[in-house]
Image (cartoon, rainbow, N blue to C red; front, top):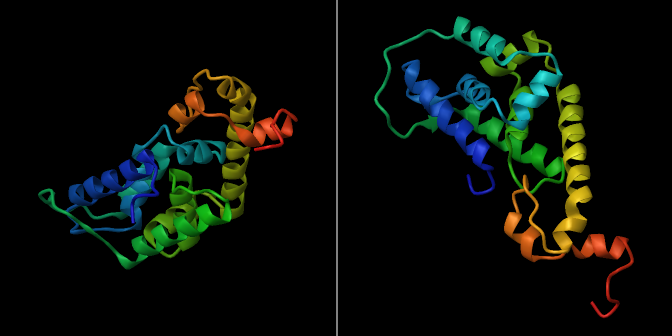
Length: 190
């Protein structure tokens, strides 16, 4: 289930478990996923929320205001509530709709917004986070990222390393055949 998750998205789920334990819960719910998302402050989701004018501290305060604090539970494997599972399913759906082959923090954010009925969805709605606006911001960030990558792909195809991508080894030792074809430099035999 978690193999398509980025490292940051996995951290969000781990942080969500910690948040649930801190609040004395035996399960991970949507609000815990949202708190985990807030803790991963260098993520795409955090940048999207920032672009939408929503402070991560404000999200945390709103969630904590509505969550009763119980006694902290010892560390254990925690299950997801049905709503939290739905958020994960919706995150997969969002990734597929955006033609991404991974699940990132941005997809988790979109899943939380789409689910809407849990505490996380209600908090995000209260703070003015709308699905379409968030989706547009995600697409804009991905477009900027892909433009940055295509600007560096000529360096990657000549053998130099590209920093900041998830495929550094491939960038270093491989050639981008699509880019070469666009530039008319692809051998017709290939």
